Image 1 (spheres, rainbow, N blue to C red):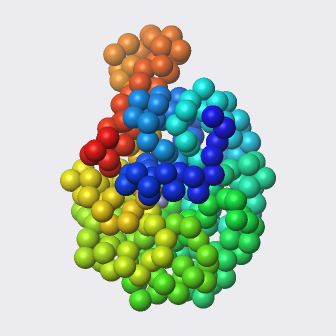
Image 2: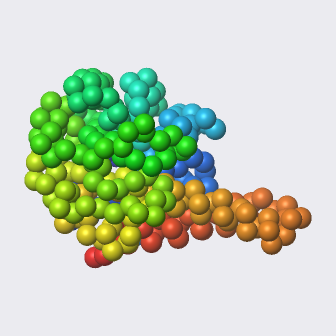
Image 3: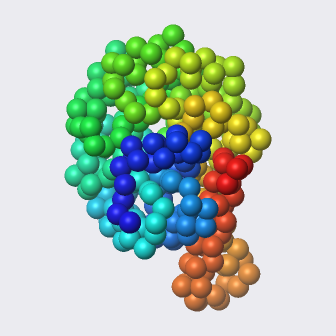
Length: 278
Ligand SMILES: [Zn+2]
């Protein structure tokens, strides 16, 4: 089927009590691996790319690659801009027909975050789903770390969501980007944030959280969990192992296909951990 709007993924997951994985792509191996896994489990999903990862291709290439592969599948998938840190990035992704957008102005003051995110809302219109971030998630994302990490203040949540009109809220409640050994969700804080939010929540840093915690998120109003490091690690490890096993290996297609399988395995496991009922 064609790419669906982020609204459709949110609605179907909410109706079925599921959490959508949001998996970052960069290239064709990662894209194929993600969609192979999504077809096996049948859970609606976000495929996403951050502005830091379009240097190889561009938003249009990413759109074409994802849409072409999805034409063969029956599972709803939205194409999402991850960490749009500028309105220019939002504009570029919208011009390439992305169906879901994240504006990340979380490092700005509350007032500036509201103003920038509300502007992104206007740009997206009502058809494109919008994720905004309140509280700044720590850790490195593509070697970019926020100057200040801060947790989401539940007292600001209702005003922020109303003023921005976002469809999903990314929160900082102990989750950290990348493989942070001490990343742990503070479920008391998550519950207070959820109680204050009129929209479903998004957890970034899914690669670094204990599986036991990931399996509980659906009960706390979480609709989307971002996973990037696991996929990148699977691909780089797969190529590295092939070279280590045989430095004269020259079948790039076999090594690439092995990487696709490694990525699909990681994605399938994450979707099942997020959704123990599937
Ligand atoms: Zn993130």
